[in-house]
Image 1 (cartoon, rainbow, N blue to C red):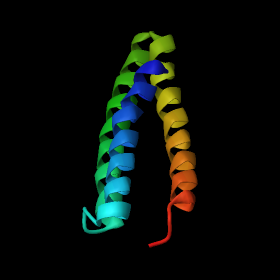
Image 2 (cartoon, rainbow, N blue to C red; image 1 turned 135 degrees about the vertical axis):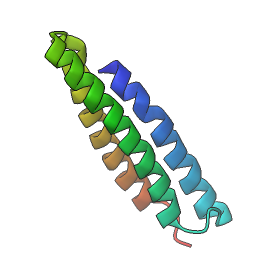
Image 3 (cartoon, helix red, strand yellow; image 1 turned 135 degrees about the horizontal axis):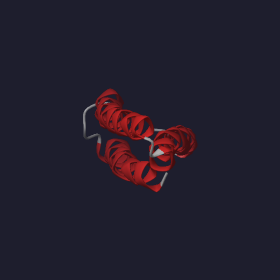
Length: 93
């Protein structure tokens, strides 16, 4: 699980950095661009975890394979909850 959860750190960090710069400096130009960049990074992470985890489960290494799949799901839930908490606590512009 740690492997997949560690993969969420760059995506979460990128989202926080871009959201902060958007709120305070209006750069990048829109929240849509911020969200698109993070979604692309999450899709790449999902593909990596799903493919690698599935291959490892098929080969018989269920511990790491299932851990990667469960870790990605746990991380995405944490990212969504964290995003909601941060978005509702941001100052109104």
